[in-house]
Length: 122
Image 1: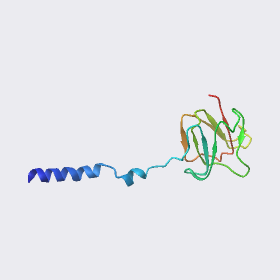
Image 2: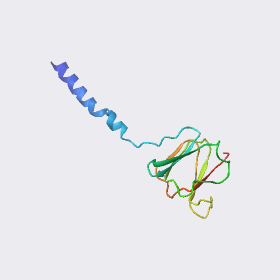
Image 3: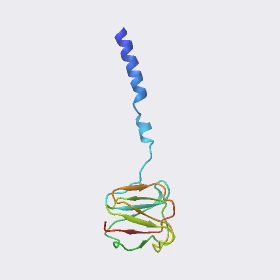
């Protein structure tokens, strides 16, 4: 009887220590972005319309402007290269800009509206 009581008590205590699958899944969700891509979302938290860029469609170290009337509020840099994002649609350094390392950067909220970017060799 004593062994049964101890075993039940240990099982009950262990249940409180182990996370449930619902609790574990409630953490922050990163945006879907494949290796080799720069993904930009129109809303914070990786929500809204997503734009995807890779090296086959852009020129290295050149200003790539987002389509007219669009901007991004969250991003994922999975290009494997540094990417500088700009508030200015002309990549002007007189407005806000930041360079993100290319090793896998997810930003659920960029501190400004991204309107252009440059991808660097290294």
